[in-house]
Length: 123
Picture 1 (cartoon, rainbow, N blue to C red):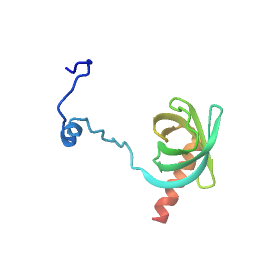
Picture 2: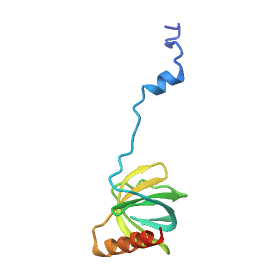
Picture 3: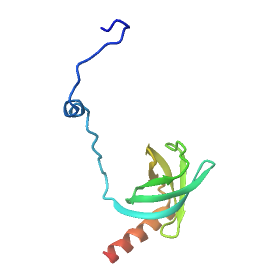
Picture 4: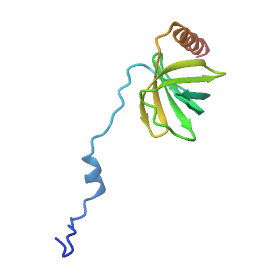
């Protein structure tokens, strides 16, 4: 121990240190469709611009552009010319990306069915 109470440790190579970190793997429950739709986001008094990063039949990941509120647990509405209006609940947030689980409302399911049907015909 150093005389002023600071403890010194031997340097550790980066590969050794980072190799001990638990690697996070993403468990995907459903196939995702990568996309880039600009949308307007509304959530409990917050309104801003966002972009849909990917979509599945049960949810989507969005990237918020600009001011960033804490959204997990909040109701989310996104609207845009490519997707119409989609409603759901924010389930996770990592930086500017937010995972949204869609509502099980008939209207949302119908819009998603039409969207994924369009992609199937297009591809």
